[in-house]
Structures are given as C-alpha cells and as structure tokens.
Image 1 (cartoon, rainbow, N blue to C red):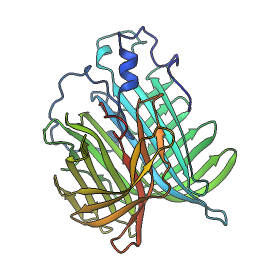
Image 2: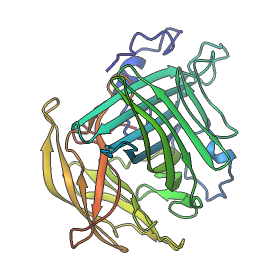
Image 3: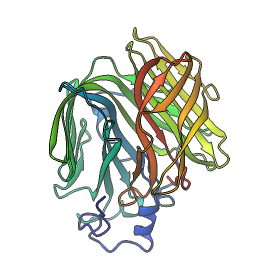
Length: 375
C-alpha cells in the first residue's frame, strides 16, 4: 500500500495546525470522508427531484460525497475464475479553505480506493489515491460522472460507465451498461441515516449493471463478464453522535431483483438506525422503514494484520424476506490509513435463502469495528 502523506498534490499551502492529523484520522468507509469540526452546522436536506445526468456529477457544496461500484465477475477462460471488484471515488469539501482565492488552496480533496478479490487465490488486492482537486491532477465534473485522480478515472456516457484504474500489482479496466432504471433510495432519493432530520443523504443506486472488460493480477490478464452495483451519495452529515459505524449490503439477485439493507451501530453493537429497499425484477419498489431491518452476526473472522474482528456471516431480516449473507473469502479487510484514515472490511459475498440456496451476489461493507468512524 503506497503512502501519500508526502504527496505534493495533497496540500501546497502550509496546512492549518492539526489539519494533516485531522485528515488522516477522518474515518471513511467505502464511502465517505469528512473533517469533523470544519464545516458549518449540518442542515436538514429538502426533498428534491434528482435530475440525470446532472446528479451523476459532483455536488461540491456538500461536505461529503462518493461514487461506488462493486461487483462480481468471472473469466472467459475454461476455468471460469471468479473475482470481486471495488471502485470507489470520494470527495470532501474543506470548509477551512473555502474563503481562500489562491489556486493552491485545497478546497476539495479527492480520494479513491480500488480492490480485486481473487477467489481462487484467496487474496484481496487493493490500492488507494489521494489528491487535492485542480491542476489536471484530480477533478470531479458537476455536469455528469467524470472523475479523475491521477491515472485513475470513472466516467459515464448515456447508460454506460467506464472504470480505468491501473496499479502496480493489479489493474481494473471495466465497462458497465445499465439494464434497469435508476433506483432512488429512501423517499424519492432522500435517504434517512438517523433519527434527526439533518442525518440524511441524497442517494441513488444502479443495480444489475452488465459488466465486461479486463482485470489484471501480477501481469496476468483476465477477460471477464459479470454484474455490478453502483451507488452515488452526497450529504453534510450522516452519523448520529452515538453511532460508531455501519453494516451495509447491496445485492444483485439472480432473478433481477435488488436488495439494499443497512444499519448504523452504537458502541455496544445495537442499531441506532436501519433502512434499505427491495426492488423486484418487474420494478416494484419496497422501501424499509426505521427498525424494519435486523442484522444478526453469525460467524466472526479476526484479521491477522490488525487483530480487528468482523462478522463475516450474517442473518439479515427485512420486510421483503430473510437471508444469510456469507463472505466468499474472509480476508477482505482494507487498510486505507494512507488516504482516508480508516480500516474497514468490504468484500464479495453471497446472498442465501433461508433454505441455504444461493439467490444472489453482491458486497458487504462493515465499518467502525477497529475504532469509531468520524465523519
């Protein structure tokens, strides 16, 4: 894992006292970054109509934002080798520099994570990037999804997306095509994340993306096809003060349905908030209310590197049905302390029926198990 603490693109100006430490300690997971204490008090977000392609682009007036694609793919070779993949771009607004007129002021910071789960090799490959926006190094368009962070990019055109993320040990070069309409999470895209009105985000998903392209591992290239899931979310505040992290699943079911479920946890493991949605293959959407989703841990795995223990098998109960969620491999912990400051678990997982039959695949994300998230 490369370190970016001395990157010339992080901050050119002398940072305010404690800035770098605050940045590196700002907890993100899969999806978020923030500098606690810099922003104005969070406001309640109004219900609004999301407009595309504009809302696929960046929203720099909000403190935190992320674009997230995960999925499962198999190689076209005879062995049908299985992989999981993660592509995540984060943006955070630095409130302390918004009044500065210098082009060198770090008003927006961009982060990115990339990972491949090699199921046959029982290994997670991952890397990260960080840079301030500007100077052709990092950018996030406000017109449509067009993200760049050095040599990494994620772009959209019509109903298609493209991810190009080379790294020293692996590479992701994938294309994604929409097969279904956009899924607006929560109340028409306004997703509650806690009991207070200000704890909310604008949030939409694009499940069941048809995936094709190339994955490379240590110089070996694999032509792959599969399914992916896209999330895009932006907000000023997500976590209730008592929440230390969350558990989340985004699952593409084999019949074309899509399941989202998440809960925010307190330090004792109790749910502070839970929600999600289920959309059937024929497009019928069911949104879950607070308290209607239950996550029950079944089996734990302890990381040999960080000694953090994560539940890698769950029972998840929702109004649309009950399921088991099982990690395809246990070792899918990501150490992002060189960019977003957090350690979290995120990886390819299977969705099983109560009878034990596989009904889908997707990603499980778990944050705040080593130390509380700070957004």
